[in-house]
Length: 459
Image (cartoon, helix red, strand yellow):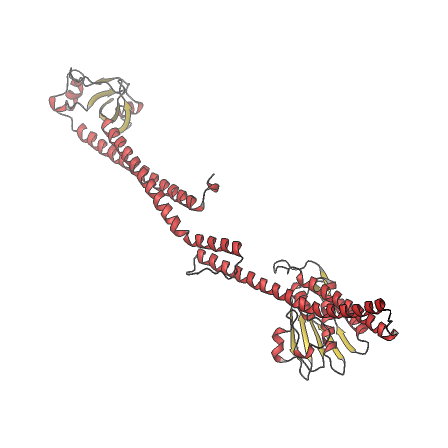
């Protein structure tokens, strides 16, 4: 049931329960210690009263059963009793106003009378039902003398102490519950602020909301995590908005050109003015090229729109990277039959999807062929898990290196060339999913070299 209570009430309840257990334990220990101390005092009092016996020990023992004790021994609270080893006993007669009730003889009393023990303390109950404390000591051959005193005064004191301790415990528990509620309210104020902030973000979608964080405790850590989460969500939203804007911009050009060419063809058919065969063929080729460009762009967008894999969940399938490189070279050679591609690869197996890796290598090759210069030479090397693709073109500008793997980013010199600016972004995404790293560098001697490093697995 406590799970349905608010956190503040649960903290107060747990605090009160902990204090209640502690107070109850202390009260019980106090009661036990007090009882033991009172019993020790009573035992010392009985031992002091028991000896030495008045007059001659033998005559007192003989006469104790026949006449009342002298006035100095008629104390009302004490009962004197002679016990024999055979279990028989006689009790000190009391006065008519204060008769004495005998104490039943216990086994330990006869053992003291028989000389097995010198003295012993124990509790007993008189014949009229009174609880007494008994002190028995050896007094002669097969004889013992016991003195008993009612436990009423001790038990009354202990009962009074128990009542007072119960009242103190109740007050302590009530105070602990109150203090616990106040402490919980103060301790949960940062959580309340965090809750208000989270509800504000959920209600308004305002990702600029931040929480002031101070200290290094758990609450501060939670606040920093919340701020990091909102910052990450804000960055994700900005990337999404940028992707939509950039995709719209990239789609607008081929769509406009496609619509213009289609309008020309339709107008020619509607007006009856046939276009020259060469012009019509050129328009149809343009339409086909624009459709291919749109298909490639949509495919790239769908690939980049997939959720990224978590670092703790790498791909479970293995792929032959050298095979993917060889197939990518074959595809690139078909696209650029005049180019020269030198290949030198050794077997290397990685975690990843073979099709995705092949497409990433094709994108690297397309980029190298596009900017390879007049020589059209591209060098492909795969050694010990490092794949390099080098061209001999003008090279990437040093200021452009940090941005080459961003979506839709294109260098100033490449904006007039075909492409969407997503090729290298797809490469970076595929390599990261496979647990590797990619970089684009200015090659010594001119040109650009792309380096891909992927961890290997058993083939």
